[in-house]
Amino acid sequence: MPRPPHRHLVVLVLFAVTLLTGCGAVQNQSTLPAAAPGSPSPVAPANTSSSPILGNVHGGQQPVTGAHVYLFAAGTTGYGAPSLSLLDPTQPGVLTDSTGSYILTDPSGNFGFGGDYTCTAGQQVYVLVTGGNPGLPNNAINPALALMSILGTCPAAPATFGDTVPFLFINEVSTVASAFALSGFMADATHLSSGPSTNAQQGLENAFLTVNNLVDSSSGTTRLQSIDANGDVPQAEINTLADMLVDCVNSDGTEACSDLFPNAVGLDGTLPTDTLTAALNIARNPGANPAALFGAGFPDSPYQPTLTAAPNDWSIALTFYADNMVGPYFPAIDSANNIWYSSNKNNAIGESDKNGLLLSPATGYTGGGISAPAQLAVDGANRIWVANRDGNSLSAFSNSGKPISPTTGYLAPGLNTPRGLAIDASGNVWITNTGFNSITEFIGIATPASTPISAGTHGQRP
Image (cartoon, rainbow, N blue to C red; front, top):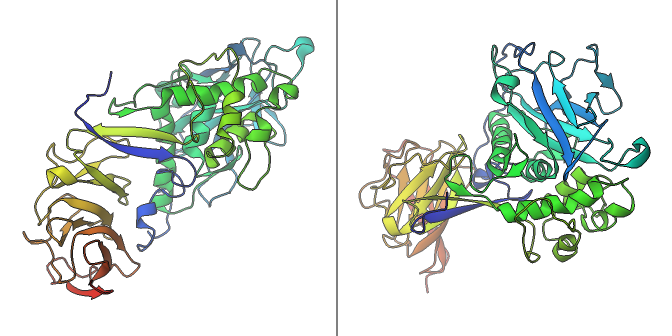
């Protein structure tokens, strides 16, 4: 379904530094008081004895036979911590190596997890595939082959993944989508983890949800629009990235990888030795060698459509839109990972959930002196603060969108065409004044909203 032309856009860029759902999931609140560490309440393991997880592994158009298929849950003990192997090594058909417990794909690339795994409700679960024969003679194995896809949130019993994920198709497209969306939490294929805090784990969950906004995991194809049809997916770019991996995947891991690996440089300058690490490096370092990587694409391009020319960089952006996004500015994210943005032309602010679904009314939230709103920020109490360019004022809203500030907004003598806004660790609001070449600090934001807020101006007026 094409995007209506009158709607306005908020673009969310996905790569490791600014990934909305990665380590910077609450990056707009970096100066705010951190949420207290905690972990979810203990829950019973999901029932895994029925409705097995079924899937297939393909490299381009080739099934991968004899590949190692691992089932992992992302860790939550800290960034860089190891993932958790979920397969029971005592079950028939489950083998173990230095990576973890695994099963093998059959001659058609098929696999299935039945009662040989357990996961705890709320865990974020993914599948890793390594090695295998992508159609090579003499049963040769490609040691550079590494692919992945996600299952997502482990359901609570009696539901199982087999009930919620009918089929999992793992290929280069699922690998690119997973690597880009999860790059903020992923050190390597077996070290995917968040911190222990509630906010960190919410960010991890959001990252997994983002994978499903990019790819249809049941078919291994790139989406044209997000799941809820409220956002555009860069289908041609993701397919082009996937095509870069195909030649290396469908090989013995030597010469066919020579165009990919030297150009998929990690941030520390190291080169990958497998295709998943190559995709992860590109996600983290999207500006490195874009033309050379474009030239590394598989000549027959099994994934279509593709880009017709090399981009400036390989960052991936999801573009969400809504009717009330008229002149949107500077999104910010609250502790529930909902997205807030100012609607400059509508004299309103809007709110969407982590998948871009609109939560605010069609006209947005209004009142509180809001006038030509520019940047906004979220404080430690989840209140929304907005700099008003036309009103020369500061507006405040509760997390439910109810205005807190008076009808004039909060005023100060130094406010003049305010635009930028940030909140410090003490809960004070700092605003840049483009009209006075100065900044204004509103003090005492942490006090109850009914308490008058004092103000001072820093810097010199012209």
